[in-house]
Image (cartoon, rainbow, N blue to C red; front, side, top):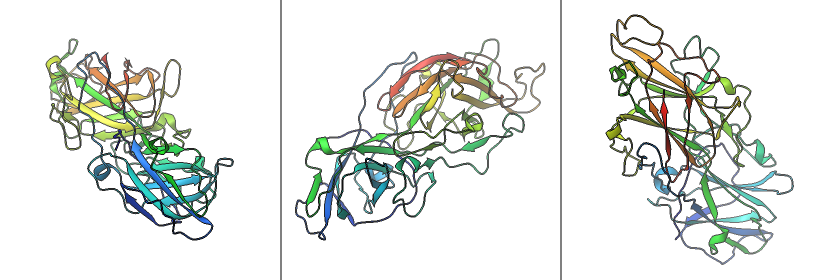
Length: 391
């Protein structure tokens, strides 16, 4: 079978309108109820190519397999004229293969009709806005929301009205027009690979790599990114996505953020990553972190531009920005900046951050530019590119 790369996700509940089975083979016989049809479909994963960076580009990427990365699959059959969901078919037996080879799934007793098929993977990882029956709901209105954090270190000044979320769920989506079901027959969308549903990442990945050995008049090697409380914030984020890959507008965009603590140190790929370089240690990089986001961002005067905040634990004696004396005890310090790029689905932004300035003693307020403007490299998820960013 043809192998392709993949992506995953979040959503909510559905209605079971037929039995489903999974296999790598297909059955062309029809034994269903009169007035219904059988649908056989195949799911593959999209593949991408490689890119370049100013630092040596990282090569290790999150790995993907049916066994380890897919937690739910649902096929929504939608009226192409009204966009209303007419049939929702969950896959009850998920593949367990440790690969991404094409799989076939058979649904029986499916109501006949002309449909657009929307395949959604991993909706169960999200805070979806729907439960129970999705029948006769507009496909645009089925939103897969990020999960809000119940506890996080909110800054009382700069984040007084902010809401923090977990990183975006790993959503995979595939859309196939003309997924029609003719009555009293097997409708086979497996045999011809052109008919396959190609699962494609609907989220983006931001990878931040830090070099704290290049301070301009300040020794930022005294800031420890291996400390458990060192963190990454990505601000100005969209927080929900529908099966058409549309990120829902958010009136609270300026106060939404993803927060996660714990940086990865060194070049040893963690579990779930392929072999290869993660940081350019030869040129001073020491820490890195990946976070998934929904597509978004902007350039120029856009109010949608991502804003990032990196933090590490500074030693006693370190002099933060704006201070005249050193810290009496270890404390977190922060750097922030605006990302000058619109991030699209299934792409990676690798941000190579050089910490040249003093860290700030508190979480900075989101401004148009922050303390730096970050240039970015845009690459397909299957590849990684990056840019140099002095802070």
